[in-house]
Length: 68
Image 1 (cartoon, one colour):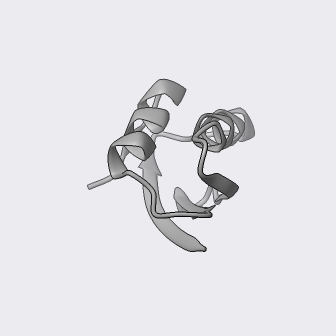
Image 2 (cartoon, helix red, strand yellow):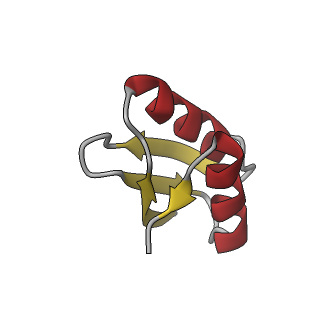
Image 3 (cartoon, helix red, strand yellow):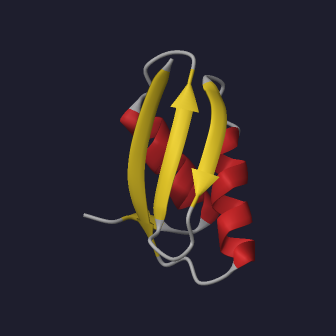
């Protein structure tokens, strides 16, 4: 099992959280997504190592950006 933590900027409400969770959850290897609205931190668990580009693409698809 692999765990990755990223920070997403621009989320302001539970709808934002839901959008990010859904898009990241659509990545085939992902088994769990935990999004913290207050900090913007997203903890992603997967069965195998995740492609950073896939995570970034999912976040952009949800309408947000990864924080630097």
